[in-house]
Length: 294
Ligand SMILES: Nc1ncnc2c1ncn2[C@@H]1O[C@H](COP(=O)(O)OP(=O)(O)OP(=O)(O)O)[C@@H](O)[C@H]1O
Image 1 (cartoon, rainbow, N blue to C red):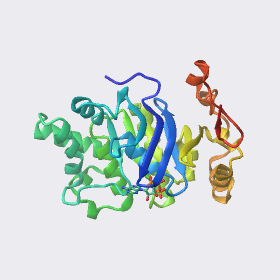
Image 2: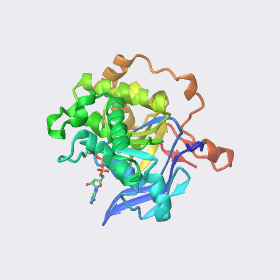
Image 3: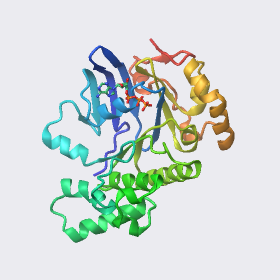
Image 4: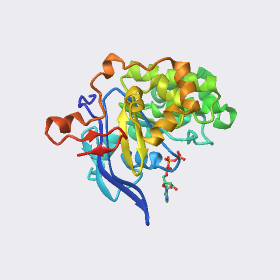
């Protein structure tokens, strides 16, 4: 059964370090059910490490990560299998097995999590996911090296969707795609989110993607999520990185392509303040620089 909690992903007080190199310190983030959350930040700020911490590929040195109500750092094997079967991940570059066809790649998680499914049904499901990802059906029989960059991304997406996930993690899905291919991938992501009711954690450097499909954007800097909100909300902050990013020449071009980012009614009230904490009287306020204060 699908999860009904408001925040399927909750990260609190996260610390990640490689030796002396501290990547995250007291980082907190909540992802709302049904949203596409864009995650941005300069190169090396730890966007991928954050994603890896959430999906259990990176063990933090402190903090808690709760996914679909499960404490990821203390989950037993059974819990872990359950949670892993409820998310799909598209890694940078697609991470397809080069010796398997696209269809066989999509079958991998099906075999792993549902070994009892018959070969015939598994192949049918894989072909359906290939089509769902916007590839022609015959792409299921091709090997990754026979595909264009855009097709590889879609093949990776088909595999991420294999288990009908509730959560979808996308690490720079439009990197390396031409603008038309990138826009088509964005549209597909949005459509899939809406039709399948997905919650999407999307790491990107692509401003067009942020404007086109993200409901909110989390900004990583100074080892933390320094702000999280709609683009209009972020634009109201005068943090230097945020201003340079969204109001620099590329940001303005992306904005012009999209039109004025008015606050959508569904975003009203989705402020930068942690509403739950406010209710509990322990709210953080955000000063205009986007820094969380007491
Ligand atoms: N396994 C690892 N061992 C040591 N250092 C690592 C490891 N993984 C990541 N790092 C370091 O952690 C920092 C954050 O890396 P990460 O890949 O999360 O950055 P990012 O924000 O995703 O960057 P980019 O936008 O360039 O992809 C980098 O300095 C990186 O070198």
